Length: 449
Image 1 (cartoon, one colour):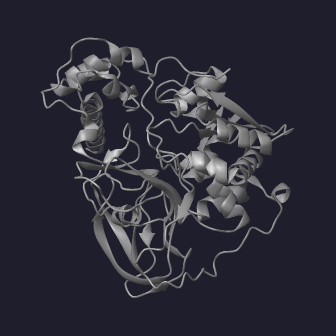
Image 2: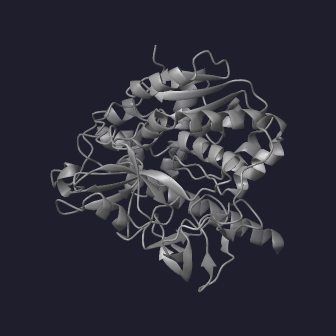
Image 3: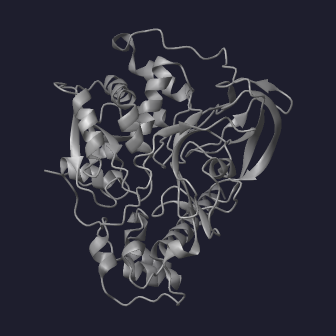
């Protein structure tokens, strides 16, 4: 029986690319690699304009604090290091590399020589850190730090293959085309945590992937496949943990606090590649879709590739564009810059027309139907949160626990009045966090005096 959580919603899937095999995008003429595409301290370039670099070569590192290094995704010459818009609209230092078309592999790259059984936890953590791997489901938290912080506290390692967002099929295709990379990546994680059993969790709308995994794992007592009910946001780690273990993750706590650690399927494949091939994270699978795209596809894309290169490879546009979204339509981010680039956290690029939004052109107002309350997986009251946030009544927002909102978008999707609930809530959370930081800074200043 498929497992699930309380709350959530059923949404139109639009999985148009579920049967599209992953195509390797021809290397673009240039890539622009942001130094901040992960949670934590931005990396600092160790190359300069005019330097020649090879594919997989280290080009930026973090010497202090929480962060990960970055590597060249093509071979060529560093054209410039400039400030460019990131996916969130912030200016980020970016290394621009002109591709020479030679595809030279860096001499720094070599497979791990020890067998997994002889490899220590510390060595696995260093392999993951040096490969520049961050969470590839969108959270982009440095993977080495997640492992490090959860050691000795975890009973369950869960590979998240729910992929509950509409349109996105990158993980689905990975499971169908290269399930061994995900399975073996999980086994490396099990060795790091000294655990004997791990879980791969897949929604029941991917029965072909479930069958493929079960075929590969026949008789295995190490990796188990668990089937989840197709419901949004089943891929959120709080809902995933509850569905599989019955444990609720309290607000402000991490999965390790309830004995679990969750990794994205593509993150596991990247760990396997780093261990077996010595390859750092320099490319990822991206679903390119939306009603403006001529031929939607799943593409294996070098990090730093322009959205425009992806769109052109998919046949270009067939109607006027209203917005470009990085990620899924529920939790993705509308892009400030059509020349934005693929980062380690980019699972999809959606190009949508005005018709795809299905709006009526009226001022959205709550009709008090309660659908947002019924669908909220965090059991909040989004109707009140949106109302208070709209009026900037931040104290009331805090009283109604706005900071526990995971911004999954279930409320906005189910709202018949099309109130942009998540947009209001996100703005309020930002204001509250800014206010808390200002108060903390003022308190520290007063203590110094």
